[in-house]
Length: 270
Ligand SMILES: [Zn+2]
Image (tube, rainbow, N blue to C red; front, side, top):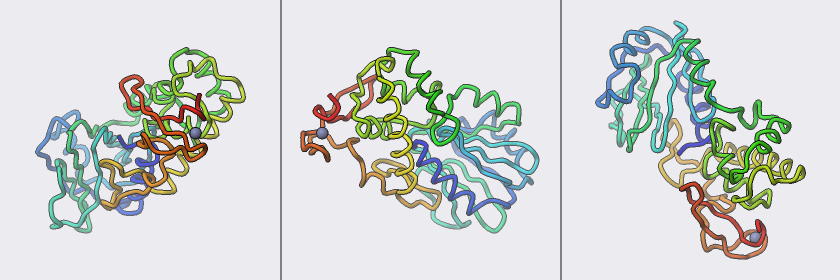
């Protein structure tokens, strides 16, 4: 699933490509992915201009000139692509938003779990009240300390719990824990103050690296122009089962934690 760095890379691409453009139409062959309905969304957005594109957690927010907002969740395999009208259809293209200047904003999604939702300012506030603070923004070290201190759940699962902290998924949780030398199974409340600080800094570091390399394309992720990111070439432990630890040469181990593949060095993160 695209995480904070991937969605942020898409946001930057979209901001460069479609701000100021007018929405001329919207079509879909997968209406269940459009909320509340295709008709309602069409009525609200056609004729409006794209004013600003923001991101919160793993979601994109497209602000329109008429104060309506389109929120997009890419879920597991969603892509937002900017193409020219008449360009070949993209794989799994299910929604097409026609824009001025002969452009199209396309929503492609193999698994079809992603969605586009129309909200007003109040609805937006409500939608995002479900999410915790996010790293590189309002997640302070003090707040992070407090979140971890309140639960005995494995620290990795807390990092990925969007209600507690938003934006971190499996890739960056694994790599941040490696960088901080913390075993993913440790109960969150048992971390020392020094470990909490190390982890806080490690999270910022791996997310910034993810943004620098324009996201990780080990699976479906592509940016707004359909290009791959490169962070997969810099994974610290994620996806590296059986390969040598970069620090101690021990073999990276894979376990399941909360149903998710979890990678760690048994020596560095004992
Ligand atoms: Zn190691």
